Image 1 (cartoon, one colour):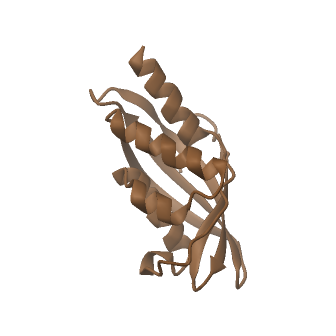
Image 2 (cartoon, one colour):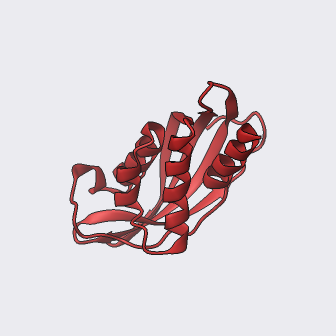
Length: 151
């Protein structure tokens, strides 16, 4: 039962397209100087289970960002492990204050007993805005690639 609950929680967290809004003006790390580096930082934070970093990129000012943070916190408590590999990023569009980045990667999620919960290719389009000299993710769209596709 716990494994099923963990699967549902993690898959709803990862595979459901959520709208994320909100920004902070506090941090200007080099990770957030370009749209690509911001998306890379988010994926690295997922990979490490780094809730603080995710919170900094997706500041929880609305319900959707709170759901993402809560999902990662719960996954960490249950011992889930995220492994992101084969990442490619493609800039869709960018101007001085807005950008869209398409991220393709392979995602493996295991539970605390190292059972594979999810193992597949993932495609997400991230929408970003630039405020106070750094980029923030404000929205993401998730796509289900065809089976056996490679990112």
